[in-house]
Image (cartoon, rainbow, N blue to C red; front, side, top):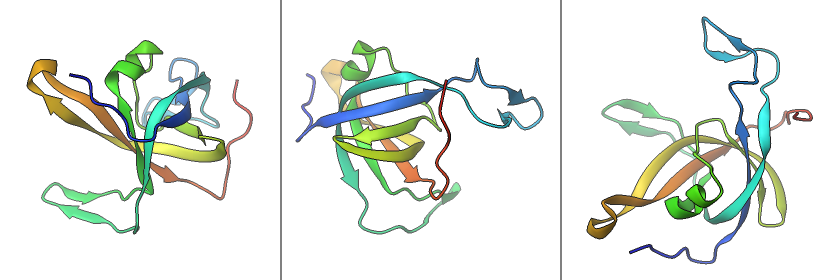
Length: 135
C-alpha cells in the first residue's frame, strides 16, 4: 500500500554536494560557500507550524522548525533523491523560498510495505542572508 498525499504541490529541492564543497576537516562544515547540486522537483504536502517553540525531550532540546514537507519515499526514489540535513528547499509551489532541512522523521508505517512509506522533512528559514549563486 502506498498512501496518497493530500493536496500535493511541486517542491523544488537543491541538495548539498559535499563532494564538490571545500570542507573543514576538523569541524566537518563547508568553508566559504557550500556547493549545491542541480534542482530536483517532486510532489510534497506542506504543513506550516502554528507556533515556533523549542521542544524539550529526554535526549535534550530539539531544534524547532517552521514546518515540514511530507514526501513519499516512492516519489523520492523516482527522481533519485535521498534527503539530508542542510538540503535547501527553494520553491514551494509557485513561491520562491530559502528553507533548509533540519531533521527528518519517517512515518506512514504499513506491514505490507515493510516499514515507513513517507518522510517528514522539517525545515527552517535562515533569513536574512540568502546564499549567492550556486554552481
